[in-house]
Length: 360
Ligand SMILES: Nc1ncnc2c1ncn2[C@@H]1O[C@H](COP(=O)(O)OP(=O)(O)OP(=O)(O)O)[C@@H](O)[C@H]1O
Ligand SMILES: [Mg+2]
Image 1 (cartoon, protein in one colour):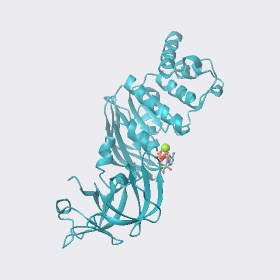
Image 2 (cartoon, protein in one colour):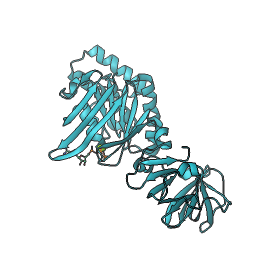
Image 3 (tube, protein in one colour):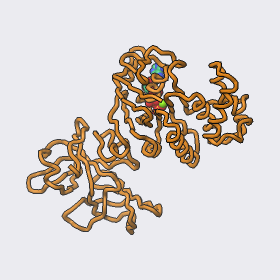
Image 4 (cartoon, rainbow, N blue to C red):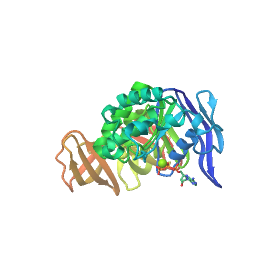
């Protein structure tokens, strides 16, 4: 096991710089999840850590060693890809043993490591089978087995579950988390799945266009997004966002560009009057009020009860919003609702930085 320090790493392909100075400190044993839109550089960063891509400038350290010029085989890292491509003509045991054989590890040690990994992954009864005789989830476990037998200092996962169906993903997610708790190996994990990121990570790194936008524990990012991008990216359904300004003469509150008004406590909005802002409310932080002095009016467009909660898509003075209620309301399409926020954030419309929150 080892820490991984990425220090101002950049990556250019030809003239094209696609990572612009990424710095992330990953502690020994930590489970870090990278998220961000397609093309932001997640896979490239993993490949640079693994040694499959060069580092243009900056430094990557694994433990105390700077690995910039170290070939992949000397980095003591195992990577599991989305397309894990098992060798179809080899049994499960041989698939897992393959990289150890290449390294010249002794037969007895190989057998021991494969048996141990198979035990951890529940593959003991499948060692003689060929990949085509396995389910998707079992194949995925073999791919992980290939990584585990190497007993690396760091695991890198690039969307390892995205080819599996929803139910299997949930099962594998739990298995990977359990595995991490047992082995304690430093792990860097890329996913597009919000729930995977939130439930598996010790810390999440949110990337955009080759930059790190914010690093933090899942709930830290959820509760205190540094900027509009993170606010909109973390959380599903996404945070509702309204453009507008603070009014502080007479009425105290936020006026949306569509003309809706939400009264707010003076302390939260001091000094923000007149500036172009974005008002953000998570769907579950909206509740229905009959107090005409609070909240804003919205018209229900689609009502989706799931039993445990009800999701209402509505329009508020021209802005489409989503509200999520745990309690049961008898809302119908076309109903006029008065919605008030229990929590909110304010962002600068130009820089996107968060400038105030309801709990400040
Ligand atoms: N070998 C390469 N040559 C030139 N450009 C590349 C190369 N590999 C990646 N890129 C570019 O670098 C950028 C980042 O790609 P990368 O694969 O790291 O994104 P990603 O965040 O993993 O996206 P996704 O979520 O779609 O997997 C993209 O614009 C991509 O086109
Ligand atoms: Mg990728």
